[in-house]
Length: 439
Image 1 (cartoon, rainbow, N blue to C red):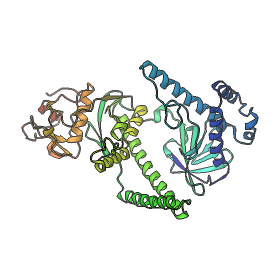
Image 2 (image 1 turned 90 degrees about the horizontal axis):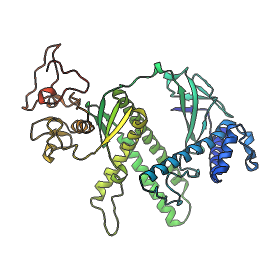
Image 3 (image 1 turned 135 degrees about the horizontal axis):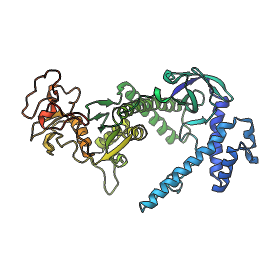
Image 4 (image 1 turned 90 degrees about the vertical axis):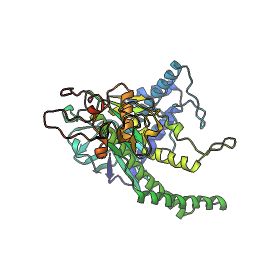
């Protein structure tokens, strides 16, 4: 993703967003046979046959046609979800907002999602410059120089910010030779334990979400100011003041910045995990139920509401679901296992007890004396539950405590050419895919 400089606050680029949503909504509102015929006309180069859309003739052809293709993909996903539900013997359920089945394509509503449009073909690029139909050449700031020179196949434009001060982003898809790509491991597996603020894999690697206390404090301050402005507006029955609208705009800007940082951290973590192993094993977490409202109902009020709401907020800020979605298309295979007792089970001997984890960060088995970082131990258990032998390298940052054997002694370093596995002396199998020589 790159920042577009020179697109401007109005003109053709902003108009593209409006016609993209208009075209999508008009076709969706008609019977399926009619919009399918409209899509066929689009493929044949005749997207303006309707009299009520004749004003589209003055606009670029490709972005308008892509709206019909986008709707076709939305209906395809809906029919696949409906077929899967029928095979499972259940129904999709209906949305409360419009009564339509879940996954049924919604009409495009302003401000529900960032405005944008797509150039699906004939993308023209010159170094860090990109040709936008009707708007001319624009410069891409912070563009990835790795793929410059490769063929650009598609560009997706997204607009954030206000109407007066918009900020444009371009997501460019390249056709990259196979030799330029970093190949992931064709074999092997890694377990991942998702926690609040970070994730830990079975190799001991920790993937943290960047924490910015100053940004969080600014967001809280703007939230208080925005809530005061809303209360004044409701009490007076008048529209929100200019100052209140300005505070709400500043709050949205800060929240978008935090969202981009979280997305970037999860993309980097998923890329490293996909490169490290072919199979990634995760806990089968029901995130939607875990982050439900803690207030409860009048008949059944919630308990520890303040603590639970704070935990829900931190889980959502970490982006567990986003990391899982990224791994679904980046990793070779994603497996899920039951999360029960992964944090209380010893990865060395299998003993399960609440006493094994006295603190949040440290794990010490009361049966065999195995010590490790608690999150690393949980990641090892997740890996084993999927049927893979555990990784044996101690967690990074845990020091000698992770290298001690069952008796509490730290083994001495061995000479080169001999086995240096410290966990093998604890009765743990050798690493997955490693040779068992010297044992």
